[in-house]
Length: 176
Image (tube, rainbow, N blue to C red; front, top):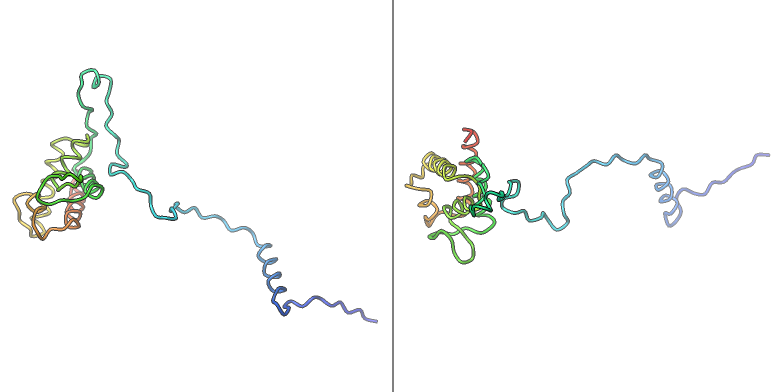
């Protein structure tokens, strides 16, 4: 006499047998290796200060005793141009004046603010302005100064950021 063993059907009317089989199969698999990915906040990126990545100028004891400002943080002309772009992005852009009561600045006002916050020297600013003039003339926009270009009615904030990016890239290539 032969004994017949009946197994429960793999698929029941409600499909629970198939679900149980899939779950047991998945449980038998090894855990996947976790791939490290950068953390991205659910609601977007976190706000970074305009000078993120650069040291903050610090007063030394001698600076405090003599009541003088802290030594400027050395930055290249390319770094100054990038900081200028970030400053405009953080505080807003303006035409026709260096700054306004809302904190918005023009191109020259942003360069002066970056310098006043202790990043670079007047020589760094001069080198950066020369790089901007080279880009303006090379792209067919002859002006007497970058400030004249800033105040043109056809100039937009995106144009200023593009000018600063191109000038920073040129300064970086030249090692300035």
